[in-house]
Length: 288
Image 1 (tube, rainbow, N blue to C red):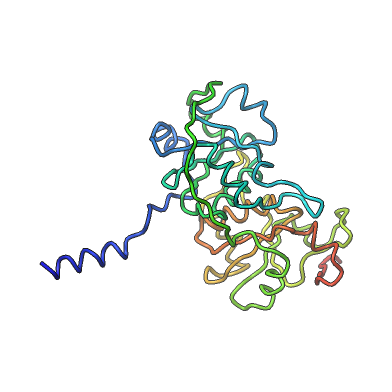
Image 2: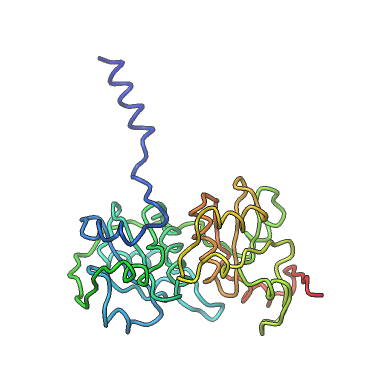
């Protein structure tokens, strides 16, 4: 009896605290599970007009700036834990919630930044993205409405995370053989085409995975096999990838795709908006 009890304790100790939900879900999956008691659906878009007109039944509206506020030192910053907790609980999110994020049209970057931010605050493995967003939902013929769901305040406990990193972390990454910095901008900006920033080009030593190459014509992330073709030449899966872009938004698509593939991902929040302004931070160009 003691041996059985001891074995039971070992099994409990080794068991995960919660089921790791998939990074991506389909419209069919969401239609089948949208009424599950633990599912929380959030529409992310820059403006609320589309949500007011119609949305996926049960969905709530998440404005990107509520979890990525601007400051005098840059756009799209990580909020403090207290603010993030208040926002998240307002959606009825608990520690056992499965959060589904979706987007309208081509606004995947903003939705991906919300995906990343929620993971940053300790909800990693509890957030999924509806691949293709609202367009995929409508394409399958599923219904929408304009009803605002009644929500009971949640009790999720957030923690300060380490997925959104600063310039000091990037500098250390550049010297670390087990990590790789990745520019998520289009190649012409990576090469050095002027962007209006004080300095052009890319962070010295960074690779390039343009976020625009990771989606198809319907704004869906490409298949894993197709995504791997962009990631594999830059770094192997045993390396940590730190993505950046102009302000820390579009690089979130690279973060999302990397998570789907199983890479260890982080994002440099200041991105080129900050890096290009600080002359002591190394940059280079490949423009001929």
